[in-house]
Length: 453
Image (cartoon, rainbow, N blue to C red; front, side, top):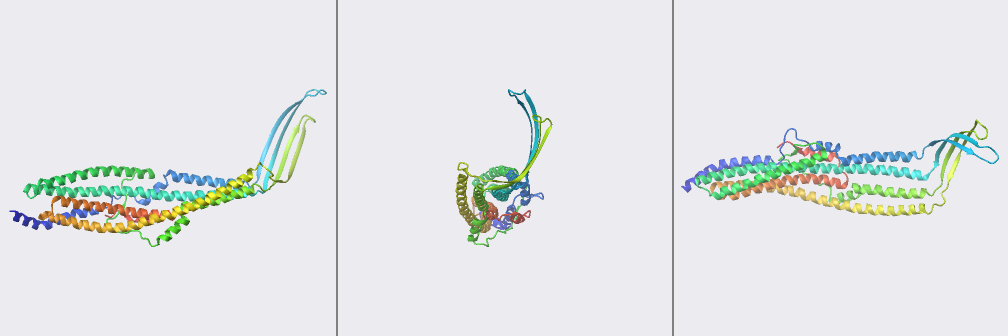
């Protein structure tokens, strides 16, 4: 009886194996997130975030303020006109005359045009650097937002992948559970096989619930950046093996980070600003030359009633600072100390940028190698599962062997999907570390994310 049953199983094994492979090909097709025609692209999410992110809007407002400061600095070298008006009533009482009341209204205008004010010139240069600083901070904020959006996007993608893989695993375990029940009914397997499959099925149900909750959390995090709910996102096709390449050596990336990373750029501008502060403190000790002019019109009722007086004056005025308690010298010493501080901060930021780029480069390099290794591991796991399923059908493998092989395959597929996303993210992070990340880089990543499954 046992021999006949084994012969029957061996005859039906090829068809069962074909069915099992079909199930797992469907599982492999679910490597990417659940997709619909309305799935959102990475570039679309980025554009939504550009219009919503509060940090970015704050940097944009800072640029507007910096432009106004530049205008203010330039206006200090322009014509300055002011007007005055007064109405004075007075009472004069002497021991020789009666009380004398007088009412004296007057109006006047003052014009001032700077001819030579070195401190104003230093202020103009400083305002230009402040504007450059704000523009650099905006570019940095845009770059950081790009990475934050990409991270949130891939978090959603990974969460969707986890659910898809768990559902595929649940289907496979369900098939194995049904097979264990049939084998137990015909007496070719023990109740243990059925119980093991049932336990694994219950576990994957619990994992699916947790994965669905995790997906909701990741979607909420993405919506915080974009201001809009995103139901589906586009992911990598199952057979898309395109990976970033590292054509330039590590030393080149490190050197570039030390020169062009945003932290270094900001420090360089801050150093130039510190130099301008020294110029301003020196300029404050220099003379100033202005063209000044005054116009006046007044009427007096105290001496000759109805008397109207007109006055006008114009000339060149020079002001020479002589002594102000040592404040100017103190400001100059302060500016020199702040320049020393800025130069050391620049040096520190160059070292930090170099180390950051080196770390990301190595992480990306190892990530690319890891993806290739996991791709091979996926093939091996699939072969191992096929062998265990066939062995189970012919009686040389037990149910737990098949369940473990299934778990190994799905774990490998999950790790592979996450490793691919991490490589794409590290590719963006490396460009961020050297200060070259831009929308073109993001579009290149987005182009790899298709709905094909």
